Image (tube, rainbow, N blue to C red; front, side):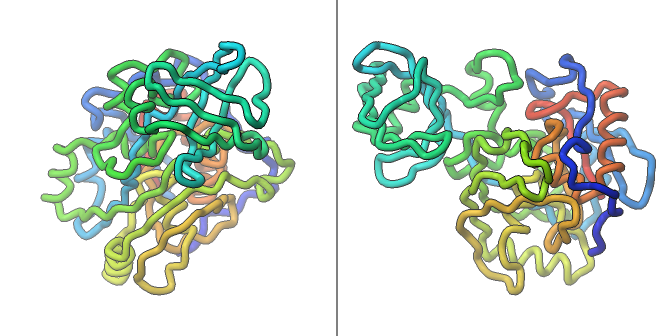
Length: 348
């Protein structure tokens, strides 16, 4: 497909910003989820439509294919204490590097040194700092990780949700598709779906395909490079089943649309070789910026993203920076709710 209009000087990160009043940041999701507002952006028109997520069966066409991310958010934030001093250490388990060894982010009262022991008394688990790698530490755990997360794990809400997680977040910050543990952030576009909506989509003849991309904390990392093409997102594990690649190929051959639900789905599809229908898996650090030519994605459903983020870059690459920022300004003016628990937009 053809790319979006090309904006001049589109690689300056300062161009990917907008003003957002703090009260527009959603602290809780819409109830029911599919009552969230949906800003409909058509790339062949200048104006936007204001709908609800529940309207998707009427907006999409029979034969279209929705591709969703089945990753499951892990209650990966735990608080322990240094065995030597009793000082608190907050740890976010990012991914398992080897059996019982995890790459983690840590917020101690002072930098953690190799050999430091951290105790998690409620679960009886302890961890030893093996090494530091950039912003992360690698911890070797003694005891069952599952028991640690069950006893002490917190839902890793994004930093812009300025409240402690609670029991409601265990369900709210999880999609109805969630199947495979591994994410520390939700694929937020998928949070809007309900079983009722899925049933209506199915009856309309809109198919569903699934991928897995385990969302990491890098999704919130701001762009600090002087040129957006120099920014790299952190590598994340993904899996695209052969069934999904065949569904995509069949949909495109029939002249119908592949609708990616979320930027994580886009990265899983665009970050692997689409030359033939086959299973794809591995790690991707694909950073999509304006100028990217999309191969597997015809439409995108996504939430509203942070200024100066790789996610806003991806959406701008798909629909054009000027069009996207104009849509964001309209969403702000009309009282849309932003970020993880906020409203959505659909780009056709």
